[in-house]
Length: 345
Ligand SMILES: [Fe+2]
Image 1: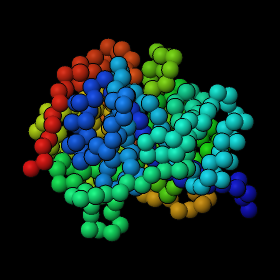
Image 2: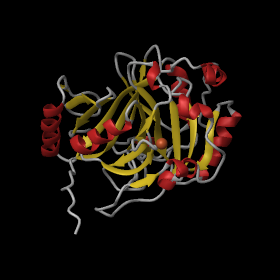
Image 3: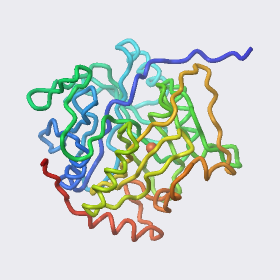
Image 4: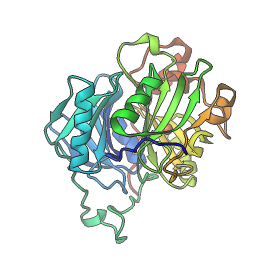
C-alpha cells in the first residue's frame, strides 16, 4: 500500500491579485467591459475592482506604475491557526518576510516571495462585500447583482507566473504552502517545463511556466491572471464585443488539454495578459490524485486540445516586458490601444 504524505490544508484560496498598469484609465475601461465594479480608490491612486460573485470586497487591485507587471498575489488561509502555521513554516525557510498592516478589504497579512521573487502575501481576516441599492441581488446566494453592462465575469480564478526554474517553485508551493501538483509538462531532461497546482478541487489556482526569455532579466515576470465565466458561450459574446472595440484578442476561444479548460487570452491596455475562463475543465476530489504528466511528445495536445495554435507571443510575452524583436509588432499593437469606455445602456 502506498504511503501518502499527510496533506496540508492551511491555504484556502486565491483571494486577490494586484497588478501594475502604466495606463490606469485605459485598464479600467477594459475591466468595465468585463463588468468589474470599482469599489475603492486609495490615496495613492490604486483602484480596487470586483467581479459580481467574488465574496470579498475586491479581487483585483490596479496600481499606477511606469510599467505593467505583478504587484502581489494574495492567498487566504483557512483559519487564524492555519495562517500562524504557514508563517512559522515560511519563517523557517526564507529571511526578509514581514507582517504588513491591515489594508482595504483585508486584515494583517504576511508578505513573502517565491524562491524567484514573485511577491505573495497570506492573510486570514477579510472584509466581505455588502451590496447596497442597485447592486443588491434578489438571489440570496449572490453577493452582488449581475451587472447589466459588458460581459460580466463571475470571479477570480487563477494566476500564471513565468519562472526560471519551474521545479524550484513547485517544490516551494508544495512544501511551504501545501499546494498539490495536478499536471505538468516534462522536458527530456526530467525537469518540469510548466506546472499547474491547486489547494482546492480546481486543477489550478496557480501555474508556473518556464520563461523563454529567462536569461534576459534579473527580476520576476508575470504571464496572466484569469477570471471565470462558467459558460463558454460568454467567450463568444466577449470576443464579439472586444472585436467591435478594436481590442486585440491574442488567442482563443480554445480548449486546453491541460485542465480541459475553455478559454481566451487578451492583453489589457496596460499591457498585462488577462485570461477569460469559459469553463474551468474537470475537478479533482480524489485525495490521492497522482499528478498528470505530459511529455514533450504530448505537449501540442496539452497546450491546445482544439482551436488554433497559441501564437508565438504567448510563449515570449510577459510583464514587465522584455524587449523582444521576435514579437515587436505584437507589442507595438498593444501600445496603441486606447481607452474604450463602455457606457451602460
Ligand atoms: Fe491560465
